Length: 100
Image (cartoon, rainbow, N blue to C red; front, side):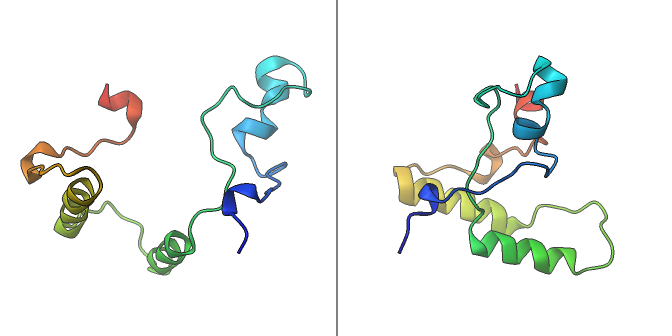
């Protein structure tokens, strides 16, 4: 089995800021794209499948976070780090910057 981190995925011409905006940002194309925190490996198949299943529903409205999400986060912190966190400690935010 090959390591997914060793696979090269060409993201040129996919509207990826990291690769397709260098001319607009720097005025040149020969820039090594380490200026943006972006990932260049494929999403896990389970994530891709979950997105396909959700996208199959014809309405894309505002959604709530299911309680199972919070439970899985608490389980992950317990299993990975030995931390017992409480549900009321978890706050959801739309991104890193708004969280600051």
